Image (cartoon, rainbow, N blue to C red; front, top):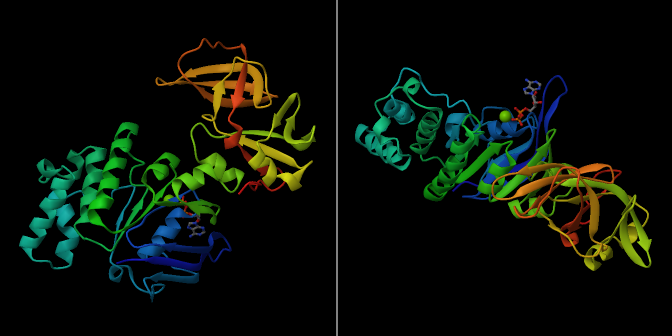
Length: 365
Ligand SMILES: Nc1ncnc2c1ncn2[C@@H]1O[C@H](COP(=O)(O)OP(=O)(O)O)[C@@H](O)[C@H]1O
Ligand SMILES: [Mg+2]
């Protein structure tokens, strides 16, 4: 049982730099929580506080009902996997995995059982007598996972564990980490700057920026209902399209206007934005929320010139200049599209996002 709770937690350095500001977060027992954000936003700081490797300078950190602020790392029942693997170069794989258990004076037969059990789950049984320099990056990462697994910790902490692996391996290891979580039935806190990894793995994601939490929620919530332009842009690949404009009433209908483009907002959106007439806004629309359009121009269409055609195997992306703004849209493989062509794109306006231009906060949720 391990529930982790942050109450107004901060990390203020003596030089005045604030690496983490007023974090309030309740991580449930057995939850898979992902801390997501760009480099330097305070993810590792937060994780290291859970491990006890870094002081909490403001607020309180709890495990269940116990305040942990001054509890030393070895009394916390946590195991951590680092990006750098941190294996002992002169020990075999077997001894690397066994090391923590030997330090804690577990009986030899129990150590052997746990090491072999972890090695089987991670499919590294054949490698147990090798040294780290005789392993690939992916194999080393499995050893690092094995070393944390055998400890059977109440909390499993991972700091960018896949970022040193090549793209294909990264994707297959994601699935394994998810299975590991199911098998271990413990709380996982996982740090990454990779939004796709976060969306795949997390029960909940915490999006951070400059030491400040931007949004906490389930992957779908964060993707579908980003609270500001930073979160909207950080999740999704290619990034969400933004188009600056203004809200105005056109023949009694609330519309988004920019240059020659007028988009009539669907009723639920219009109702939510009714008090925002004349406001300067930024419309957000994801690449997938469109369809090719050949019929008459209507109030959900934008027009533009194709800047680039980018096939990605299963489908293709078009970069289109709309009202002077380059935007990415996803299309099926079919259809003849060439650079320089003028095209009409129908937006799925039920899926649009609308932000206040002034402070970049969402006007919808
Ligand atoms: N001793 C220190 N003094 C001042 N700032 C520090 C110190 N150690 C780390 N930082 C700063 O804290 C911020 C957060 O770092 P970190 O948690 O490692 O970010 P992330 O893991 O999200 O990349 C960074 O901007 C880093 O430069
Ligand atoms: Mg880090």
